Image 1 (cartoon, rainbow, N blue to C red):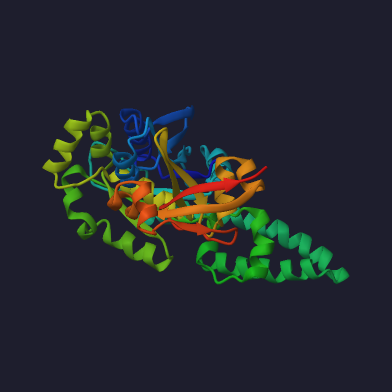
Image 2: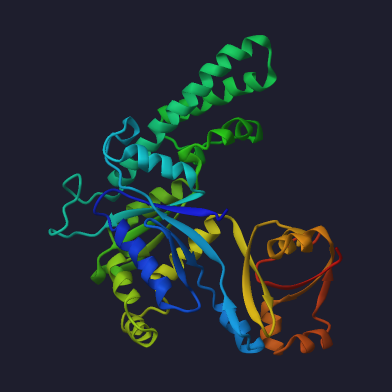
Length: 366
């Protein structure tokens, strides 16, 4: 099952525009395809210049990027935790994703009505966070009731659940999210099965006006959001959904000209997708040859046999060794043969922890 990133936000913040730009951008490029799974779910390729660099060396028949699943989650209104609007749908969809891109309106436009009547980035964030906390409180209170009942028998797990749930509810009362609380391993063992909404990592997408993109983080509407994100250990990507939607409909040549005109080297979506990818604690390794250059997704800290298993379960089951070279080394030396002759090809065993950007060949016997 693909790891999924949910796109959330209040009405009229640019959430759907951003999601549609993601879909159009993927469809425009043969190297970075976008495939709509459902009306609101899509697999979006992770733009990676290393793929193109490797392709110039190996001249493969195909180039296959890695992907991240994006989910356009139904809009939220105040009271969602009590079922207002599409609240139940919104919250259930958030529960199913692994990370969140929270689109925050950081632009003024009299033609686009704000749900609360004024543009207030931190107020918008507070509305959504409050609804997530209220829903999580329900889950934790239910677990606490069970712990209070069962802890009387001396059950160690239930005693820990009692401590953890009371600690988390105290944090909620102070307006803190689970991901910003100081929790230990014992706490996580209790909380992980609850799949709490406020435990999910978040990337804020500050959606600015087209003519304000050049201001970047100096935008006065973005700066409070930056401070808020830093305080909770999150990040902010400044983006203009309107510009991204416009770029997505252009040819590659027209897109490059447009980007040059606004002083950008790549679409903002590329930065957003890569940040979302890293938010999931994912890294990429490559396989490269005349048939294809391909990017593969694994979790940070994965060992060589686990990486091999991403290609085929037989590779992991019968793993013998991995032949590894850095992607930069391969590009600089120009061929695998040159890498071998220069002694830059490493042979690694079962305990090797894969680095982001490794080019790997696996030897196995089944």
